[in-house]
Length: 230
Image (cartoon, rainbow, N blue to C red; front, side):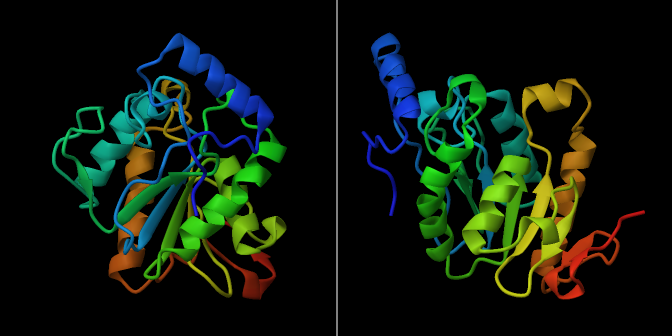
């Protein structure tokens, strides 16, 4: 299940999309579909399409700075093949990895409301349910993290967001967290390239090593709450 091109579940987003269509007739200006193979073990969940990024190009994280960092890192860790050229016909392909967003349409000022995230949650649920080999979900930012937890039926209080945290609920895939790879976060030093690579080092180790977690960074619902990192 995916939203149709003219989905109007969220009136504010639909109106914003209509405005973009009038201003930029050659852009995608529609809900952005997921990217990557349907048998992927890793699902990356971002916040929403950027106005001049995925909303323009029609492919997640394509055409803005966040994509430059994300796709370079995916290639470094063996999750992407080919050359990323910031356009959907660049020939880039994903390996054992799929990318989607918590909200499929571009929001004003890059900030969806809680109601809009909730309205789009069935599409995220369908995405997760359609990945039979899924083992790790990487949430980019707190909003994506919370959307994933709610979609999977987990309590937010049991698995609080934290950059570099990896959560192992009693059921379902492991959930890993990272600050969003936006230009704002990198320009302010909130997220460095080294910090982002460290997240993917943990994700790759979890996939290659049977999903084991670093004891100091994991949280488990069986313990009643998160363990504390030093």
